Length: 551
Image 1 (cartoon, rainbow, N blue to C red):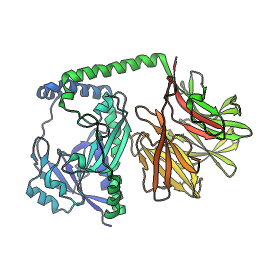
Image 2 (cartoon, one colour):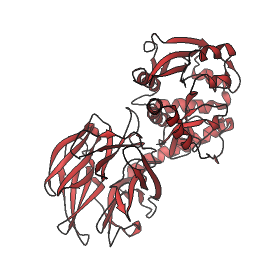
Image 3 (cartoon, rainbow, N blue to C red):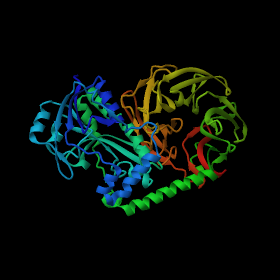
Image 4 (cartoon, one colour):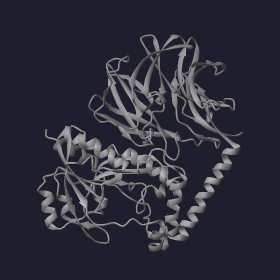
């Protein structure tokens, strides 16, 4: 199949870094070529903050607020750092236009439309111009593809990522869509949700803009591989259900000086409270367990295992052996600020016999996922700080473990969870597509015939989940009443806030489908703030939780 012919709609050759990297990926790909740059030739005068306030004095406090946020919350990996893309597009034909701008949209004249159609482009990508209307929407074979940062399930009518932070909305949406005359009726190509930052609009935007970088290359490659018919058959299926919006519409009145002044001090009070709170309160990860016939699901019955105040216990995984339970955990001593793997010996009545460290490296270890195969025990702890997925083998149970091999290298992966099904090993792991993107958002699936291999094949539907509220693994995949269930972390509002239980309905080399069947929120105890790991073996059910206690 011929590479897809791409056109770019740009306001300037100085573009944000996330756009630069995205376009660079397309240029270097084997599925697309950039054939045309349509540059907005309208001159835009860069205004100082003072000039903006002078022209929009009714919204002066909003403009000051945004400027303060950028200065107070600096970005480590700034998605909006400007970079000149002209050298990268050297040799690509340029077409300058001056759109007919109205109050709400940009339109192209007939001559410009004819000129663009003559290029026979497959896709136009919108990185510039205003809201587009008219025949320009039909000037390429598959339409104009455009990002909408701030999905209508969360917020509408305001700057993307703003109200999600200010009004404590736990998630911020991002959408890639094909533009139509009606913005609300655009065909959605991809939708994802990120955890909203607690305090900063700037950090919030930076996080989800980095993540959205991967959407366009991912969908263009999918169109190239699947072909037009199969690709749009899947897209139409995903767009078959109506999308309702029942929240309020944010208008200019919401950005008045009085409104912004009130919101600013409310937000400032929240930050001051947080500073005082962490001075006197310790939020500590602990373990909770229940021993009874079958799986325990009433968390108010669970007994607590509370560590000393200088450390926390988290990510429990269980092995039942020799009439004892062995609970493998992440143990982190605050003074070291680096996790290691420990094991807790517990008798059948729930009495703890001892706690002992078993694996420590010069990088952080957590999530000690245990695998039993052919009378051997293996462990895959999270080693994301080392950019690896590592396999350890137990030499002398449960205290002596040896590094076996790297299953993957040069990857940003967390909470890797394995499941043996239909004579294959399935690896579920959360990954970030690029530096700066969150590791909480996207679940990837790989498979292999054997466990001890580096030949893990990526699933064609990757990422199989792109939603911070339901992606990151939260314990073993388990079978209950002949059904397969996958616990997932719900990181709305904060990392590891709660869990969701999903039933896996389809799992094979070509397809994956799961449905959410229940959720676990930390509501059974006023001092429990979060919970993010669930495991069950024989009669023991164990979870972790973030406990609020005084220092």
